[in-house]
Length: 361
Image (cartoon, rainbow, N blue to C red; front, top):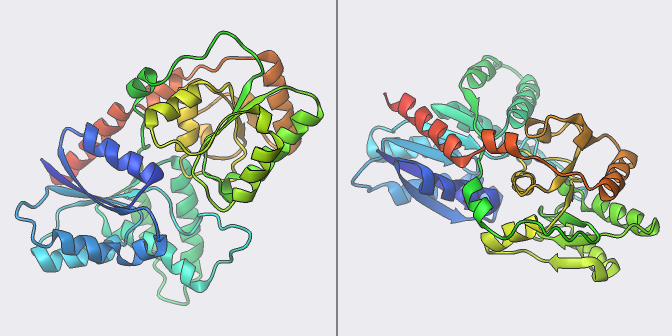
């Protein structure tokens, strides 16, 4: 069966997801992708670009999968004009523009709400909507309800129920076999424990709190090392301060393009102190968990879907610092077996293929 996959933002977790679909689906998945940049243009114009590329396809697909960085409603109309009939479309919601956190130097304009409404229209245009986490699904539905209540007349609140009924949750999934084969297991020679940062250096990941943690540990003469990964974002100044103040403790710094090398560095770490204010899914956290890095996680976020034990969570800065210090002292291990069972890419692909089969038959 031929499946067409549209990924207008081919970077980071979007790229990871798209590549996994191509490699692991038992269907023939043909990827159309655009570079991961200029997100507003992608949402506004990717549908026009991709539909034009696919206009003259001789062999039409049985189904289409679109990621959330495009306007599916426009895309569907264009394909209908080109093809005369459109196969069922699956809309995979990586993120949405209603609840995506803005940095402190940005403000939401009326225009920006239109991008969130595009996400909503895309959901209604698709035959099936898949969210990467239940946390994300519920957050988006709540935001849409508030938005629809602001409309001046001709209420369309009933469309929210339609969207809810047409939505399911399917994680991105991880290739645990590949992770197991990459890098080396942790050394039994435990010196100072190694703290890991493997997220984007953006404000929503709250690297300033991570810097405060490092300063706190140093002030209390608690030894630690650092592995600093992730693509640079709007918090490059915080990253620079960490490089300057903790130069002698840094085992690695900088983005790593090789996935095997990246996983090897995760396996060399001991503790994952997550300071993030928001995650729709948290692929970087899941990758670290799969490498048995001990997590310390903010309460009330998406991470409760992956870690059930309350002892791994903190509710304030004092608890955050305290749990990190306790783990440095106690050197507890982390068992990722539940994660392995629930987030295997093979299980995810099996479910995705089942969804597609149900749409077609």
